Image: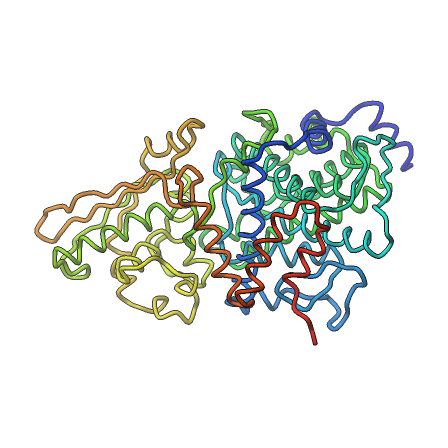
Length: 500
């Protein structure tokens, strides 16, 4: 039956969306130096985010490590910042969760919003595993394509950087025009698709096997985004990316072992994805796959939901003005008006009780209130249940004064591919009826169009890495990211903790 299904796929052909992804991943040559530079920064930033999670979130740390305590996988993936050596499936879950858990990794907008660095959980776990296998056996893993042009070379850092660029591109290009949130699905479906395709390439699968794996990912069933929305917001939003990474690796490995795919998994009129899960819509794409997404990625330098970061900047400026004017934010302010873009209005506009950290870090009003009271930027620890802000009645007083308005021009500019702004404005009405001057921030810190961003990303990495590692070790990590010919496992070894 398996061989018959394989022949059916080869005869009838897979959906064009899947063929386009596979052709790009297997054949596109990465030559853009800006893309490679951003890929290096994205990898460091993601590992820094993972270390930050290890150091600050006992909740996430409780999820990682071998399923059977005390076990270690020979030549397995060494999970950065830990003593664990795992199989690549569990490794993908653990690293994907650590990168994503605190919502501090990079982001990309569009009709769907998401975090392309989520894919690094799958890519690094597989690349490190392959690299260690190569080191142990003295050779590259075999390819089954029969085409020398797509054989898997030694697993070098250059190969990993290219894999990151390609995963970002697949996820980002599909985010631009396709809204999964509109049909109630979580955006991590695109992590699963992108990682499945690129992991298949890393594993040395044939293109037919990659297509089968992609189709399996599509028919895998997809999480609802219930865990991101009031009143069910919960910590699953932190490990949903790890779950997508895990499934991607599993689908690629199963397909490499000969499992057939479903060629018309998207387009079948009765049982396909478009009919059953996408309200009859089809996947669209604005641009050809290249390296555009990572060239234009948004690095999160403020630990807040991405659509709120410009509001954080506006609130910081307003806090300074309020202090200089001698205004008491609690007694002298009647109303605070926030104008925002449509995505922020949908995702982080919340009233009512905030029950956990996941609720707080996705509440625009909470973030702005804390910044106004502190006069400093928001911090990861400000969202925790034991943070003094979580139980501070002044926060709720200010939240009650905040009015959030969806601004149509902000929304239009957000979706405009030539503008891609992420605007928030903040205005304060005093008790006597006068208004302080409105503060507008259109392009928040972290955008690659701001010249200071990459330097700040490196500083963010060093700060996060310093939570576990020493200065000399950190400098070695930053230096190693430039060694494109080095095997991946040598780089990962720098982040591993010796259990002795």
